[in-house]
Amino acid sequence: MAYRETAKVRDRKALTEQRILQASHELVAEAGFAALQMNQVAQRAGIATGSLYRYFANKETLAAEVFRQATETEVDHVRRCLQQADSCALSRLEYALQTFAERALKAPKLAWALIAEPVDPAVDQQRLHYRLQYANLFASAVQQAIDDQLIPEQDPMLSSTAMVGAIAEALIGPLAQQAQDPTHAITHTITQFCVRGLAPFRYSVTGASL
Amino acid sequence: MAYRETAKVRDRKALTEQRILQASHELVAEAGFAALQMNQVAQRAGIATGSLYRYFANKETLAAEVFRQATETEVDHVRRCLQQADSCALSRLEYALQTFAERALKAPKLAWALIAEPVDPAVDQQRLHYRLQYANLFASAVQQAIDDQLIPEQDPMLSSTAMVGAIAEALIGPLAQQAQDPTHAITHTITQFCVRGLAPFRYSVTGASL
DNA sequence: ACAAAGAGTGAATCACGGTTCACTTTTTCA
DNA sequence: TGAAAAAGTGAACCGTGATTCACTCTTTGT
Image 1 (cartoon, rainbow over the protein chains, first blue to last red):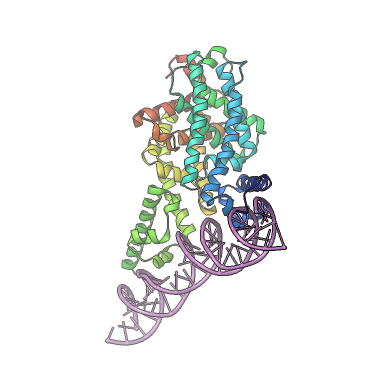
Image 2: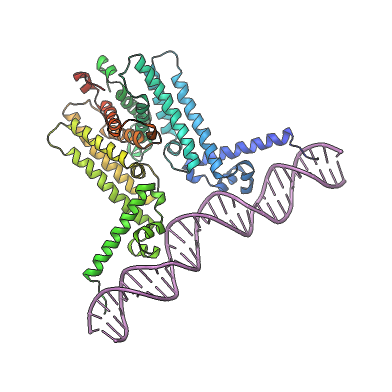
């Protein structure tokens, strides 16, 4: 017995793993999962191609982990918006939608990769989790708004899915390019579309709209 | 001079081309453009792989044509809904949305391939046309509804994009599977979500909702 | 300082799928 | 019928990108 992993080595390995994930994330954010090529990752992380396989069993595993981490970040942002205690369920939801939209618009490639780009079954599995998390987050806010009688009875899951779709399509679809309005205006408009979709009552009462 | 294409040959070639396109369409409808592989197409069409290249210069060209045809069919259906002369702009739009949703739900793989699956630049080019056609169709109906003062002023293009996104996500996203409601109920619900998104006034006036 | 054990390497290998091409078969017309 | 022209064939080729592996370099404990 002459070798046993020590703290120094463990730290170095952890660092390398971080660099791999960082490099992978950058590639995906720049050009989607199609750009996640093993030797590109290795090159950007400053290691040899073969070394990647000391850290991740295969590309699938790496891709799934990259997806998971990116996902976590995005979902956390939205979750935090929904946890503001000082406003009604509908305002919180509006805030969360706006945040979701703004972040997607600022990193459209990443948003597209997370929402739409097909990769492989392992990543699709992750994507299912991701969408479920979003759907659950938005849906519970919708449910609260229903309970508080801010909006009429409806299927919260279906509504929240529709909202995610509306935002995704409007912001990252190929038509998004043609929009000439400033970022904030677009996200606001699309957010309002979503909120109206949920809550016709609210606007009919106040008379405020658009 | 001893050979000149005759009607018989022309007809046979036309038939073969049809079979190729039919086979391609089936493959795409079953599993998306990823399943559009040249030897699979050839096999299903009952010809040799090499023969494909007598009909289409390369895969890109074939894929683009498959996309174009599928697109045309879908857009025509929607267009026809919007041409009903016997109802207001908003009802027509609702009918068109419902049709769009029902067709997507009945052929989810195809809908996904047309709406979201990334393929290659040539197909993406086609997809841009496709979305533009949809967007223009829906947007002109939205514009009419605005002119008729059925709904408030808004950016028709953005609204129509959002509606397409909402339907696509709700119906073909991975969450769609979990829905237990019957087809008609789902498409109705999601259509209503879209219409409300456009038209808070309408519902505030009549008081009818959900 | 040395040997065991792991970490790092990158060129070679492999799998996959689009494309080609030398060849065979069919069609046409003099 | 025969020769020109085109259509049909499918095995071989090729590019791309993931994965492997025989090797070298580091680290560790005696």
